Each structure stands twice: as structure tokens, then as C-alpha cells.
Image (cartoon, rainbow, N blue to C red; front, side, top):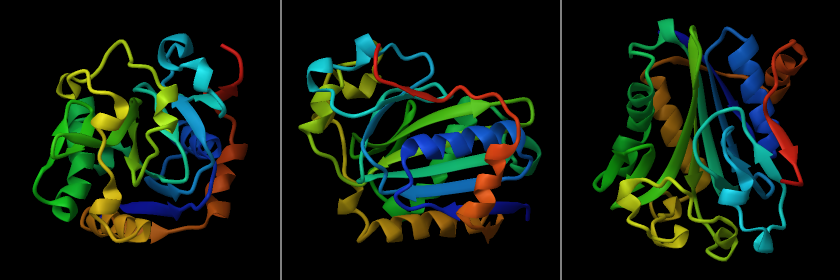
Length: 233
């Protein structure tokens, strides 16, 4: 089995997590998994997102971040859990194409969620409601797949997100709070959720846990940086 370096983050702001991820995918040759929960509040857009189309500034009271990957817009708070995989093409037995990567990552959850779980379009869904959103970054040698998982959410906070111009067909024009699912109804704790993910990863890799200090070394390696936070749009 190939080695996968695992880092369990806690209360790490999503901006800092994205900086780690971008450094790893651009400047590190190892396989990585980053787990995180407890981030401070923020709105995170995909690299091509236009804030005026996605964010209702009347409700805006948190930082806005543009990440280096594509995908949709997410409201982040302490009840958002994150699972990021960064893998070399040669170490994973799938074709490095978006749908193959999505489904491969989606299998991490199937055995632990059970009936009603599906991979639909770009989302992870339970009984027709989304609990996981995904985005990817693929290079000639490796891919990154990061997932934001809804442990819980506050419908009032979701008001800041406009209906995006492009939505998955299964959403059927439902408002954010009408097509989302909470993982707290499936797992007893966030720790259990992450432990189940690690169980699934251990069937595919030799998992080696490392510290955030080891992870942070990637930040000093020169690399292109496309993740940034801004306050005006």
C-alpha cells in the first residue's frame, strides 16, 4: 500500500486550510488527507465565482474567500467539516478525470451512511438532500479533491447566499435550507464521522498521521498562490 499522510486539524480557519492545500498540490510530492472542523465563519467561492451573482450583500457580515479550485459557493462555520484528499495519479487506481475522482472519494462514506446515500452530479446526497459539496484541482501528476460536509447549519446564515446561476438539476429550485441534510442525524459526533473516514482510507492506503507542524513546512516552499480573501467586490 502507498502511504497517505493524515493531518487532523481543529479550529483551523478555512483560509489557512486552503493555503495548506494549495501548497501541497503545487509543491509537495506526497499523498495527503486533511481533516478539519471548527473553522471561523466565512464564505468561500470557487475561482471563477462572481460575488455579485452569488452573495447578497445585505446579509454579508463575514469574510469572503476565493479558493484556487472551481466549484460552488459555501457558507463555512464551526459546524462545517472538511475532508481533503491530495493524491498522485500513480498511487490511485483510477483515471484522473473529475467524475472518476468524485465517485472514488464518494465511496469513503457509503458504508457508513447506508441507505439513501448517493453521489449526484457534484454532490453527496442523503435521501435527495445535499450534505457534501465538492471541488477539485487536477494537474498532470496529481489531483486534489476537497469536500465540505454539513454537520449542522443555520438557515438564517444561508440567506446571504443567492440562488446561483447554475444549480444541480436535483435541487429543483429549492432554497438552500430546503435541499440540505445534516450529518449530525447520522453520526454521534464529528469525531465519529472522521474516524469512519479514516477506516475507509485505511483500506486503500498505509495511513500515517503527522502533525500540523510537519504540514506547515509546505508553506515555505515557493509556489503559485491563487487563494485570497477580499472585502470588496
